[in-house]
Length: 482
Ligand code: GLU
Image (cartoon, rainbow, N blue to C red; front, side):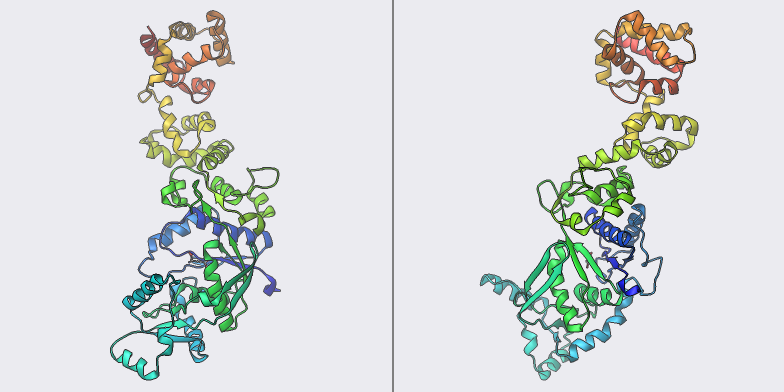
């Protein structure tokens, strides 16, 4: 029974923050596990000790959790087939290394970096594909001993058979590579650390991974890994290589295109469900152009085929559009919590803010925020000693807004507008007295009261500011207007 259970894994190398492309790979694996009721395993591929950093690892785990991509087995959680850090699994590999050596499928290679570089250069100069040509394969035992006595530490190379390498890809169909084009590759480096391809195969086998879902940039690695599956007599998992996220210029999404890590989007005020929704449907949609979908719908509809066939162009504008929808649909309490760090970041002391007041402000601003960070653009409207009158608003006030602003001030000062339906009554009365409507009526009022020409609903702004503050602002506007 358990043998039919699907097991997938996400295997990041902690050499940088989580890129949205990798987050999408993690998400596809997670969705696959959720869709079929399987297990999602997180394995940290930290054998490259020079480039690996515990800070990146911590950030990757944090970002996955922030995205609600929780793992069933992995770091912090454990599981029956751990450990889940590759560096702690080094001893596991010995047995398989010995097997390959005794079967004549692996041999020590003593070439130095300089020798390998010279070989690459000479192949290139003959217009041949650079690859290892097998110099150390032909060494006799004596020659090996001699090299070792000179202090040379060997790497271990896999003896690649000529002939085709074929596998079925669940997204791309039948794939075929030529063994001749692949040079004998390293499986263990001279520092005794196994290479990615070798470690990944042994780990995927020992962790009972049934499906490997990863980016198409790994296709050539899969060909190499198939050779190892064969040589070690392991049953290979199913493979699915999804397309990569591209920038608008159709090259692989990278720093040059702008923000690319989950952390950057998070710090810019993108909500995690909006990013998840975006990454799930990027390059496709849930039928009939539906673009906003709950996680449950996304899990139900998930199919590898839809997920990753054609290259997906990353469109930040669309992500922001989705984000605004998620903000608009967010409950005010929750949104207030989410906004606190951004309010702080914008230079406000949140400890001095009355929570009831802040709640009202958030409710007023909710429809205007595209990202959480936008809160900094609007907050000053509600704070008397911070609010400023923009140049556009000044221009509106100077273009003959004095009349309407004065009427509004008088109405407020006379104080004979009923409290009930205060705002509509107030506006009606100003409309009657000035004969103005629509933009001619509202734009000067907005400019005078908020100092802006666009922003939150005036009715909400009026309710938050209260009469005294509005009258003070109107006096100031009258000075500008006359
Ligand atoms: N550590 C590899 C990477 O981050 C994993 C690739 C794989 O999924 O096998 O690219």
